[in-house]
Image 1 (cartoon, rainbow, N blue to C red):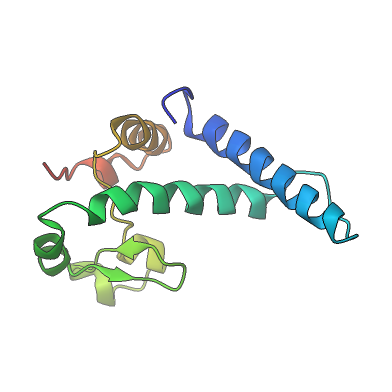
Image 2 (cartoon, one colour):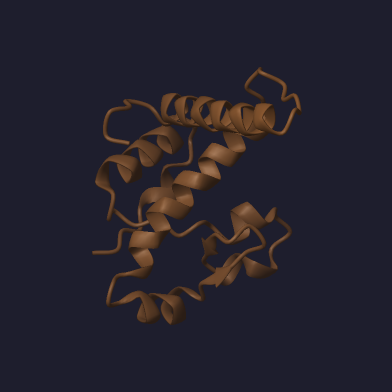
Length: 130
């Protein structure tokens, strides 16, 4: 994770590795898999990294406090999200209930924040847990 300068590059490389593994497994079962990297492959790579980072979050001694404080819950993908005042707003789930990331993996966390900031979403990275 530390070797990638942008989130996009990290996700594309992860997606390619996962696609390669999928193709090898498919070949062993005499199936074929589209060799091109798709948007769903990038989404799967993003989900993979979010879960990796959140595993370290769950090991923190303050995790149970954060769960109550931020109203955290596991969504259908197994990702920890935060509830808040915007829960009843007419917005998409991703906007109402943001994904919980903490700086336990500083390089991934800061890469995500830099990417979001460049897209105009800086407000999502303002709350830090220390």
